[in-house]
Image (cartoon, rainbow, N blue to C red):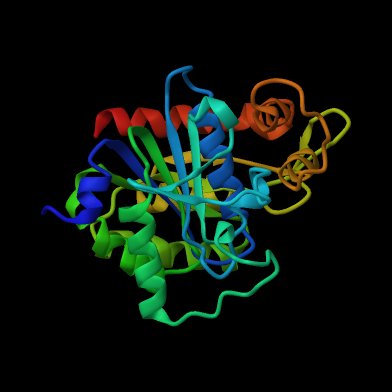
Length: 279
């Protein structure tokens, strides 16, 4: 199937959708960590992150580039590079297109569909090893639009599901899983986020909240359980831009590597890469 999207994405090796059944489970922070860990997995790897949470774009803020803008070239929109001149981590979001950062996006389905198609077909992604797509919570128009436009590259598609340990979140994660099965989207595994609390002093994780629900769901549904991530105040500070340390080539990555979450996500990434190698 030769379309504008398939032509644009012909040099993208893996496309990973990050899904969550409900809002507030930290899906965007997981997407951000996934992109950062992929980018640091090799000095030559190239990563893109596409924010299709059109009504709640948070990727520009988390990468510390919400003051940037995209511009047109003869070959399409040029994404914002979170790592500056290195140009190995490309970001695209509707947040870059808003006149005022506080403006709301009030769009019906057809306009959302058109925006997603443009993100996929008109952005100059170039050669990427991985394109991470941060999706809205639930299974809505945006998800159906993605699957429709990405039909020509279906063999390169996969998903990661994010949940928290609470029963309500797990019920909604099941709906996500049902969606992936309905559209024949391979699931790399399940991540249980906000599982415990990482002490900002020593990094020790305490299970002050419920935990283990994600692992049980993965076992029951025969999914790979990728691991748990705690509530990490250091990570929150980094992704909110609260740490002012601009040394190094990619300051955000250097700050992130110092958080308790970074070491935990290394194991999660290993699990994701193991599954991708088998596909």
